[in-house]
Image (tube, rainbow over all chains, first blue to last red; front, top):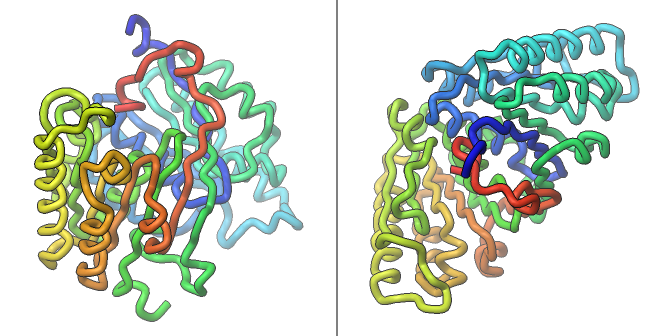
Length: 177
Length: 177
């Protein structure tokens, strides 16, 4: 259809089920296949050895930014450093989204960063509002802010129907990370 | 945790929202990053030029099988040829799953193939029941059969909250295909 290529979409993957970050990565793969550059900004996963990064590092045209101090963010006790690291991620994402070289920018777990007050939702909306028309943005993570849902073009809620953790199994290499 | 690597998961991505096939592809990327071989068997998409296939063809250790006659399957008028093509896909998937070389086998849109009677659910369950313990299987598509949901370890329903098609926009290259 006319103009489809030039109208970037704002996509939100939220909900409590598996598949949010995974779906964003699948979208990255599609975008790469269509010759677009992709940037993945990780907001809540500072230090894990993700299989996807190993695999994607073999592909051209995809870059990553990862900030966040060691260890997990405690939502009951967010530190100034947590907020600074989230700001660094947002800045990297903004440079990618606004720089004109990237066709898709993934803001991984940014919904959680907003819900936990590491970032203000307005700064995220500001990024979206200022992006070039042809850039797609994917925001992942539980607890998507209502303002982001309203601003998005496409929102999917991943709903957990059944999960092996409920059977007492831990996270699985190659599936969960 | 002990044994995690040897216990393959049966994962179902279903529901009416975007992100099912996309999530499976993200899982493929993770598996590749962890050194596993991946096979993707397409059950309902015989002829489209998917971006992901172009990108993934640049990665080692991933293979595809695609059958299906030209054009779309009409659920009101399923032909013997449709059923034969679905059987070919199942056979290719079975060879990958049972052959011992693959760590992840994706049965893309197989839920729809079952719902539209291109395949009997028992033949799919038979594949799952006979796979080596360490193989992960992902089944995607709307209308997942209750028997497959019961058999699965992890089920996520992708729920459409908002979709640009509702605004009259068509499918978008690099995002939808």
